[in-house]
Image (cartoon, rainbow, N blue to C red; front, side, top):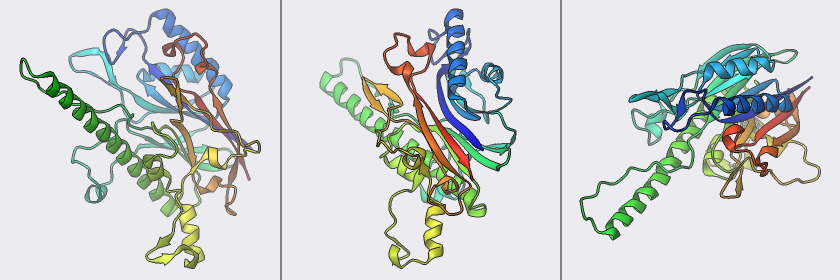
Length: 343
């Protein structure tokens, strides 16, 4: 049996007359219908059984749209927020999950209390978008745990400095650049904290059910060699545990390392031609990989106890190749799809 999973950043899915971020960002009726048609066509092209969605403002509209494409089951764990001064303007989107198989449970990923003792987390820390943890019962396979995430972007969190009248330009420029420098680090810290908290949640599941299949679908907003991705996957080589070199570890200890490692689907999917990784997003014509599908050891080809293997990794990016259609009518992200063949 095969199952297909995908991740899909919808790019400001906001049904008019609601705006996103500012009152002028509203789809016309024509643009909204065009966007919905493109999304529906793309869902058919992806041909998935489970999809994680990002940048969802209009939850009910998405539920209705994907139902038409065969996704009977749909969940979110929070609702988008609006501007307190103008309730026709959305200020924060949510993530969602759609499935053709029953979603038997769904929960938000929460910040565990003990991490506050070990990490620089303030008492009011929260995810920029709360991730979903959903248990889906797949025919002939059983339960698979799916996470859907949209981590903090690289956009700096800038606090605008206060300037007195007739302030010297040198001071204005310097304070602004310092604020931007701090803002970049604030964004990195937020994203890094989100990844390690997500890793804690995933490994909590694996600690009690170490062979349960787990799939993470998400716009992780960082490149594949970044520190946040390393914090989420822990794929870096382990040289020693508790002072004991890796080669001297027991078989049980070595198996535990693999059990708690999260794998990038691109790295373990067949790639006989050695094709380079395709970007999923472009900024100033520079391509980056921001969208990922990660899996637990249960789908690792080298695991003798695997329940399935990844047989295909695909990026749908035709709409990013200068097709003359604006991003808001499609998406500024490519979609990533994997095929899993069960054992």
